[in-house]
Length: 91
Image (cartoon, rainbow, N blue to C red; front, side):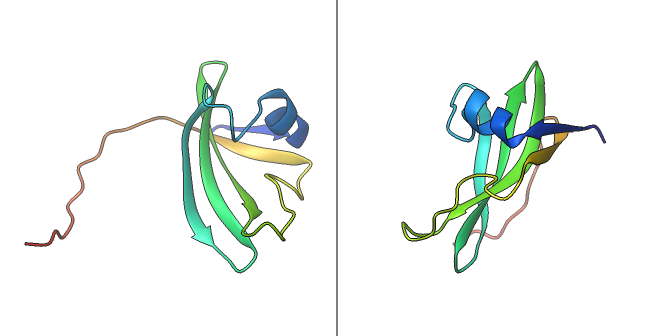
């Protein structure tokens, strides 16, 4: 598993993540809490794809931005793979 550490400044100010549509490949909410909404982000940088998580405030009263409490963010290199999935559908 390949990891790379980016600074919060790189991700937010230099790359404009998680809002940069040119870099973002996937940005999915995976959990909510009383105060935060948590996301899994996959983005492309220098021809490689990286996955990390971040949270934002759940309401306008929660002043929390992406990687608010982190100076450095560890990302994991990922690749897109196709999978077949079975699920239960209504009839």
